[in-house]
Image 1 (cartoon, one colour):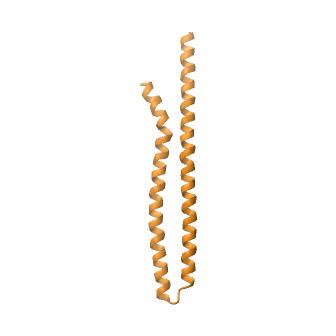
Image 2: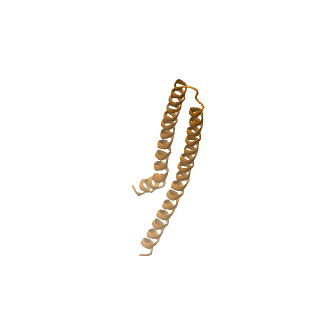
Image 3: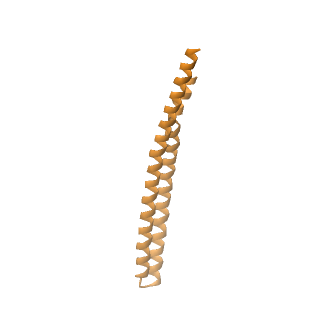
Length: 109
């Protein structure tokens, strides 16, 4: 009876340790995602502001269209690159969150 209780206690301790490791990984990766999104938002705002300034300084309609086209192309490329980076961070987020549980499942087999 005492052995069963000790086994239960050990298993409970391991489960708590696994959960703590998982939450630590979630916190770390979540912060990285938040920082990345904040940096991108700041850069996108600065790029948009610079494009508006160039647009107001355009002397002709052709120059205004050129400025707008260049900004649209740059903004799209930046968005695609950022979306790719964020999706990779979310994939890492999922891997890190479940890594402690993989060891527990492998041990249970």
